Image 1 (cartoon, rainbow, N blue to C red):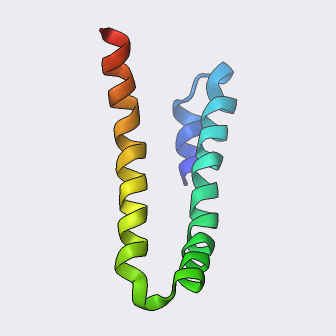
Image 2 (image 1 turned 120 degrees about the horizontal axis):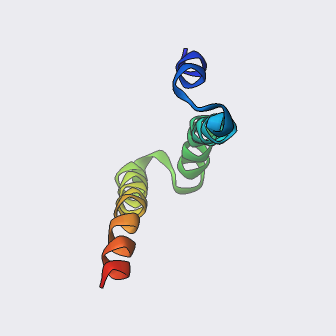
Length: 75
């Protein structure tokens, strides 16, 4: 469904970029559960709060990184 939407709205010279970005996003959907299973097998299910806390810190850094860099560039 997303493929059809991208195909309809994208300019012809930008379609490759949009389809590539969509596929990169799907890589996370593939490797996310495997990484979660690996972390649980290494640290144990009883340390779930620590595992999810670690992933939360990583996500917060990843989300805030573009905003911090943009603010530094504008200075």
